[in-house]
Structures are given as C-alpha cells and as structure tokens.
Image (tube, rainbow, N blue to C red; front, side, top):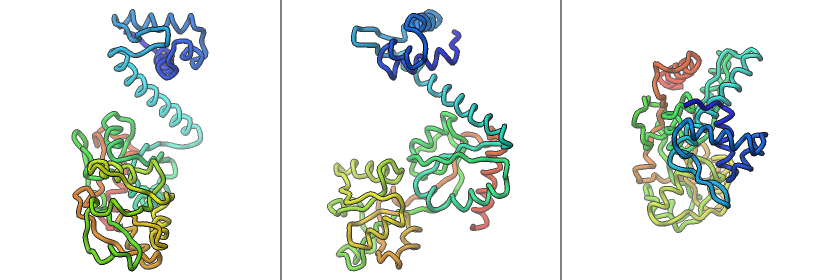
Length: 299
C-alpha cells in the first residue's frame, strides 16, 4: 500500500468537496487524473474508500479511517514545512503548545516571555483550546506540550502539577447572591450572565456543565478578556464565572463579590501534560524544565 501526499490531499479534498470533481478542482488536477488516483488507492488497499452516487460520494469505513490518518499526516507535514522555514530565519527550534483559557490569560504570559528572552532561537506556537481537545491532540502527537484542567481524561499522558485554578462566581456588590459564601451552578442558571466570546475554552466548559443539568446559560454580553467580564459584572449587567485569581485581582476595582462554586469541576487544578517526556524534542524539554523551575520557585 503506497499513498503519497498528493493522494492524501486529494482524498481529503474529495471528502470536503463531496464529489470527485470538486476534489479534483481543489487539488488542481483533471477529473480523469483524480479518478485514476482514487481507483489506484482502492486497488492498492484492496477495499473501496468511497461510495459513489449521482449526488456525490460518501466514505466507507475504510475511507473514514484513511481520512483520519490523512489529516494527521498532512497537519504534521504543514507543521514540518512551517518549522523548517523558520530555521532559514535563524531559529533553532519550535514548540507547539496548547492551553485552556485560564492558562493563556493568567499564567503563561510571564512564563513564556521569560523563556523566550532566555532562548532567542526558539519560537512558541501557543493556541487556546478546551482541555478535552488538548489531551486528544497530545495523544495524537499534534502538539508538544499542553496545560489543561485536571478534570480532563489524562489516560496515557504524563501530567505534572502546574497551578491551582478554582473557578468562582462573581456578582456585583449588593447583589442578592452576594450574601452567599458558596453556591452551585444549578442554583444560578436563572441569572443573566456576562461571559467570554464564543470559542473560548472556559465558555465551552460552562456550556457543557449547563447541558448536563438540562439547562443553558443566558448571556447578556460576551467579551474578550476576564478583566472586561469583571468590569461588566460590576456594572450590574449580570453574573460571571472566572478563575479565582482574576476575581481577586479585579475585585476591588471592578466592584464585584466572589462566591465559591461548590461543583467538583470548578475545584480544579491546572496540570502540564506531555505524551512522553523522553520523546520530547530538546527545545520542548527546555520549555518544560523552565516552566517547572518557575513553578517550584513560586514565580
């Protein structure tokens, strides 16, 4: 079985386009050439990859398996080309890191800035993702390091303590709920909320927890930073859920009261995860060691 990168890109394009014709156009090849490549792939495999009809094509079980691995291979190749291109500009290494909302906004800016200052030849590609997506990416070797909530399924990964990161409810000073010292999410779902923009990892977590209760959160407004959320809550627009560190830092200036959330998922810790420490590239290991040293020193 021999599939080259052109075969894999064509197959992904055919799936995304819904027809071999659309896949051929996206791959900049003729329909005849595309059809011949698909047939050759099926002949080599000894199984059909596509079910053909007048309305287009659908994947067989073998086709779905190939699609999954084709995307992984192509993503790896894209990363490889990007990183090798950076070497021509004088870089010596590249680290691909995924983290959740709290990590990217509260903890990593100072850690990464100090690391980059010490290692001018290394670049870091940092992306925000939900914790569940990050652990899947680590298992599939789609990133080097991840910072996730310890509530995620960490099976098969090596995890190291990073930061305590409990979530709290924030309300305006004088709000009826401000008299509570602790409360559960189920007891506040009737409240209007202030949250982060769609796609943020924290908002995905909150939406998931609300669905488990058979409810959803009603947002008056969505903003791009925790500070903005706190200030809007302080103006009486609605309640918010933010990391405790955020509530402590902005509590007085924003005029908010923090309330401990009793739900188990809110009593979280952040952990630094890798698939295999021994398999890390030298520059990824350097970043990991830098982060752990800062954590141990309390910085």
